[in-house]
Every structure is written in C-alpha cells, then in structure tokens.
Image 1 (cartoon, rainbow, N blue to C red):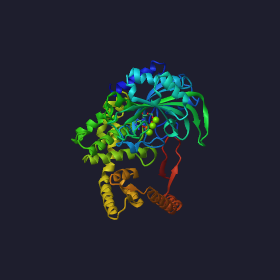
Image 2 (image 1 turned 90 degrees about the horizontal axis):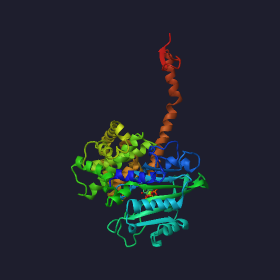
Image 3 (image 1 turned 180 degrees about the vertical axis):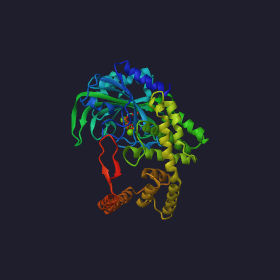
Image 4 (image 1 turned 60 degrees about the vertical axis):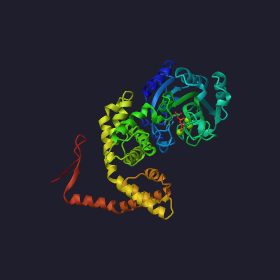
Length: 474
Ligand code: ATP
Ligand code: MG
Ligand code: MG
Ligand code: MG
C-alpha cells in the first residue's frame, strides 16, 4: 500500500464513522502567536476543543502538514539519526469535540490497526498515563489487550500538550515492534526505549484541560479526543520496512538524489545520512516555502534558513559543487502534488526561492568550512573540544553559519560549541549598533533635512491618490 493510498484509507475509515474530512491547515498557524509552525493535527481545532468555536460538526478527521523544527516539539536534531523523526511529516488524526471519549477512541484505533489494516496484535503495545486506570481497563476488557502489553508512563510521555498553554490531557499511545534486528539491541530494550525498535505510531489524547500561562489547568467544557498518527511511520509498518526513509514517501526523493549525485543509497553510511537529511529537508523546505515562509534572519524564516543551510552542507558532503536542493522539488512534488495541489501551482516560485538562497550561501559555505576546519585543528592541538563564542560569531556574522549548523558539523569530531559565548558576542554587536545609531541618529536626520531645505526641496501633500511627491517649490 502506497503512502498516498494509506492516507486516503485512514480518512475514509473515519469518514465512514461519521467524521467530517477537513483539509490540512497551512504550516503557518492562523491567529496563534503561541505556535511557530503547525505541529499537530489538533492545532486548527484548538478553539473547538476550548468551546470557543462551533463548526457544526463534532467529529473530524484530517491529514495535517506538520513541521517540528522549533518550539516545544523540535525534532531537527533527530533527523538523520533516528529512523522515525522528520522535520516535516503528515499527521493523520481523528477528533471529537465533546462527542465521543476514551471508549470509542480506543475502539476506533484498534479496529483501524488490527482489522482494517490487519496488523499483527502480537507486535503492538499500548501505554497509558500513570493513573489512568480507566484507559488501561478499556484496553484490557474492551479490546482484549493482555495486561503485560499495557505500560504506564508519566507526564513526559503520556500527558500531551500542544505548547506551554492550550488544550491538553492524558494520552494513550500505540507502539509497533520493528523487531530485534532494529534499534539498540540491549537486553533491556522495551517500550519507552529511545531507540527505533519500539516505534510509537499513534497517540490518542484525551483532551480534558486548558493550561493557561501561569500553569493553572481549567477543565474543558466537554471531554474531547485528539489523535495523531505519523503517516510515514504507519507506512513503515505497512510497507514492511524498518525506517521511514525506506517508505515510498521518502524514497522518491532519495532516488532522485542518487540520480543527481551518481551515488547509491546504502553504499556508505556517511552518504546515507546525507541523503536522508536532504530528503527530509527537501520536503520541509518545499512545503514551508509553498505555505508562505521565506528564508530570513528571524522567527519562522530563520528556522527555514537553518534547515536549508544544513541541507546545503550535506549536499556539499555528497560532492555537489552546484546548488541542488531546488532540483529536489520535482521529486517532492511528484509524490505529494496529488494530495497537495498547491505545490504544483507554486512549483516555479518555490524553486526560485530555494535556488536564490542556495546561491547566496554557496558564496560563503566553502570559506566558512575552511575557517572552521582550521579552528578545529588548532583547538585539537591545544587539547580543547569546545568551539569558542568568537569563532561561532564570526562564522555566523560573516559566513552565514547558524550555530546549530556549526554544532552539527563539529559533533562528528567530538566537539561542542560555546553557546553563551556566542550570545555574549551577539549582545556586544547589538550594543555597538545601538551606540552607532545614537551617534548618527537625530543629528544625522536633522542634517539631511537641512540639506534638503537648502536645496529648496520640500515634500508636498498631493492627496491620497498619488504617491508622495518631492519637488522643488518655486
Ligand atoms: P516521539 O516520542 O517518537 O518523538 P511524540 O510523542 O513526540 O513522538 P506526538 O506528539 O505524540 O509524538 O505526535 C503524534 C504522532 O506523530 C506520533 O505518534 C508519531 O507517529 C508522529 N510523529 C511525531 N513526531 C514526528 C516526527 N518528528 N516525524 C514523524 N512523525 C512524527
Ligand atoms: Mg517527539
Ligand atoms: Mg513520544
Ligand atoms: Mg507521543
């Protein structure tokens, strides 16, 4: 079953059970300053859970574009290292706004996995929140899951919140055993281990509270349900592979990179990491730009820039001398354009933006890398393993290296970075900019006015229809 078929299958299953199919929202959250990017299917329904919006339906299902590369849920550092984390992924979800609760949510999830998809129950495990006996009993009595396959975890794993504030509640998760050949191989490896063997596939959140900024939890008007299942992860299970990167959703981009680079996936672990990073970042970049984000030096734009620069560096490692990320858009769109037609509509624009950013960074990437290599060599000679703040700052300021890129590059050498030292340099620069501004501020503007006045140039009001015009008044 292809990724595209699986997405459709999920939506149909819930549509058949009275859920309204709702399209994904944009990656830039609408009217929600607490959120950097859409990071879960429930985001667009936040006000429905809070009882502040009535859409006329109380059951919904969606496949939501998500980016987790900043804010509370940030998986940027996991990309390339785990088989299951992406910066961009799709979250399949079913939602109840005060309609059904735990019993029905658990029944639907189990039915979809074990009957509709026909998964082997002996490879599935579930978790519940520490004291959620109700959920544990439903799993056991209603669905027949043996007690020894039901685990209990605390706040970190089994209490879900969208961010520091907003709807939240205890959750129950479903895990798939990828088999003993996957993961850390430790005899203690079990559900909850951070390796890839027991892979979390689906989270069922029992939304019950709204957390406010001071931490108080107010019960929601009605208990609700929010679930999220990573499309790429359930694809891994259904396609019988061991990594999200081996599903058709990601393989299309990897094969494209193989063709462009003349290298083969699985020939060398080092190149494989680069190909996976590029495949992931190509999807994130394409979707983010499509939804209106532009690379810049702050906020969302800076997250995008950091993702793109990481990809550019991996492209360099694969041996590309010319910009190549913009050429991966074709592969992303071929796979995803059917479900997200906006990608095809904006294809040329997306490529242009990526290419411009790549070309811009290409001018300084090589020189920055050379400086960083020299610094590493010198520090090694001195027996040190931390890149000082001044070096980080220089790389950032002159060569456009975000600190996380530098950290990523030197990690392989066993080096870390002096983040506070970098911040101190940044602060010093801001300080200097303020000083500079003070010096040339008021007097500077006054001087310009004086010059204009001496040349008899005045601004004249010519009504609201015309642009402000400057002219010599005689
Ligand atoms: P994990 O513990 O594996 O990091 P999570 O607990 O942070 O996942 P949730 O917030 O519960 O994830 O999100 C619901 C589902 O979305 C997960 O069960 C998983 O299937 C999927 N998911 C979460 N993060 C990612 C990601 N970075 N890449 C791909 N899928 C993800
Ligand atoms: Mg996570
Ligand atoms: Mg988890
Ligand atoms: Mg989870």
